[in-house]
Length: 399
Image 1: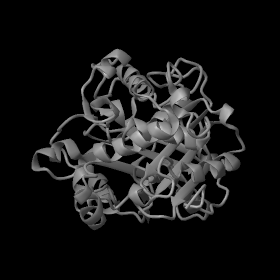
Image 2: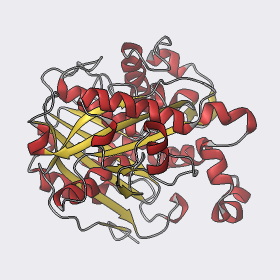
Image 3: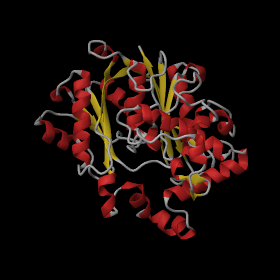
Image 4: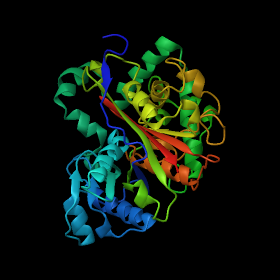
């Protein structure tokens, strides 16, 4: 496969400005907390309800992903809040790519009258589970038969080794340098040090610190790799009309796009080895929103590794393919640079590893003008979601 033959965009209806995100909530982010994923999600949901000024019975739609079998589904919601009302239920929510595409499915449900207020949640207790060597991406990938029989025997495991190979290929093809990957890590860490709930808020990082950090999987240092943590987040959606009657500024969903790899679920099968399916997701989202790249004030992308940040910045179209390293160098990604503020909460590299849903919460905070590392007069923000064979582009705007 060559060019863009290896993937395609999902065919989505226009849901631009049909709904808004009206409530957001973070659970406590921490190392091992001893809590379950459902307890963590319940805390985030309580805070999202308070933020929106809604009661538990107002929520008549819930979205989650049946990921690891312990997410905050309808039964857990009813048990926690003591409710018994009917709820529209979708398993197309949660984190990763679905943190960005959930508003599309919620918009269809709200538009058709199946729900009025839809909750999306995702949480992990991977730091708590780590001593038992369960949970987290390591277990998920180690149990996959494709990886067991093809990738692992060739040493392409665990994830830092996996993505280091992709980074090395990007360096080979485009001349990307360690300093440029380091610029991503440094920007995210700076933002985390300004964020009151970030796990790495007390651990500043300079580019010199980064370059003198030992290699763990060439060309990666530990700062190129995401954290393992406990935590979670939630957000609540409703129609634009109802949003105007609630307490928070209206943050509308302007556009959604979903891109797919047709060549397989894993990078070893993917036709575009130094690309992500954002190349297919982003164009539709921008067309639906009716905006240009220059209109974007703040960007957040799913960032398990610095190279995934760099490739998504390219693939969403903020620079040409292969020029990502030069584009992100220096202060480009810093919240006060006036260029392309990126992962202003610190991302999964420095804030917490909750697989993207906290990124959406951060974009909402930015557009409300209440973020810790606030981008001046932010009006439009993007979340780039990712997971293996799919990517999503979610465009939000202050209205």
